[in-house]
Length: 277
Image (cartoon, rainbow, N blue to C red; front, side, top):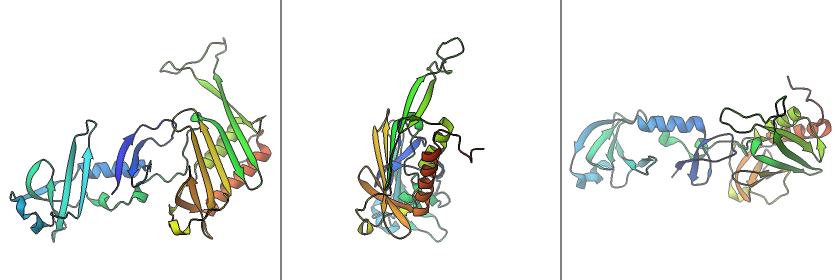
């Protein structure tokens, strides 16, 4: 069972629907849009019978699958699918509608989506505007990026405001207490939050080892603290432990690229990044 809900989550870069069951994680925006488009386009083909005592004859006593759609007022419509016909269509029932029908399978591909397929794959996709501090711990170093914000001023010393009347803020970055190059910091940050998972862990294989990388985001909106650790899993992958829960893994090579980027940033934090074009 997969449950998708629209959740307004401040301070994230991927806005939209969230998977709330079997676990809570942001949903992939593209696949979610396709899912709702397909569900909305599902079409009844024909009326079969109004004798609902014969549900078992059509596989509807114990439906093969069902999906429910809720609107903003919590009104819902549920479609139950029974046996499949030779032409690929299904017998079905629809909540609030008496009788048994057939439904086209043309737009039912979304029923094959797993929760992992539907989820957004980013490990920690956090808008830098919501971050006050980021701590990065590796086997050899602990680095702290602090973000401070001051109002942007025009040439007359007046606060600059956006189209909605909000004061525009300028961000200033430091690494371990020393002024850091803004663009270089943002490029490293982009490397970090671009990490994506590759699959779901087997709980029996998860080890309680020391992380090769631990990130702690201290934020000013939404979830105030997010701790993500990349811990040993097997020869090719690290497991991702976030706020104490381990559900996914990713290629070690992905993490190594971030570690390399961090090493480069640590050495040249106050200068432009060489590969910035």
